[in-house]
Image (cartoon, rainbow, N blue to C red; front, side):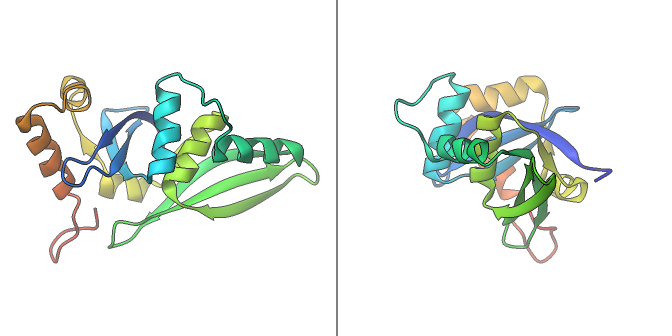
Length: 175
């Protein structure tokens, strides 16, 4: 779409309240970031890729890549289409099959789709309205500090406050 935002995964951090993994994605054209919840398996894949490591055994994302290749298909993009009041992100995987040149759209959970995008090196797009509702803007220095040194209570408190601002309430937009 016209107002879609291209994002890149820049970090994986624990939510200071419950230690659930959070994927940090950044708009490639600004300092706007978005926090996306992840499950443990996808977080492991993302952490491995961010760290430049390779798993000894194929992970589910590697197997998915191999299946796509075997059937002459490729992922065109990952698209985060919608957010609801419960903070769920509705995510799609757009798959192009070489013959007959047809695109198929498959629903996916956001962390699996993002990890797959990293394995395949394909674009991750967020609908403009979703990004406007869910992003925050941080200075580069502050973002680096929050991600790199969550050791201090002050950093954890600031991150917790930022995440709580995403909570839906009677007079707040979702996320």
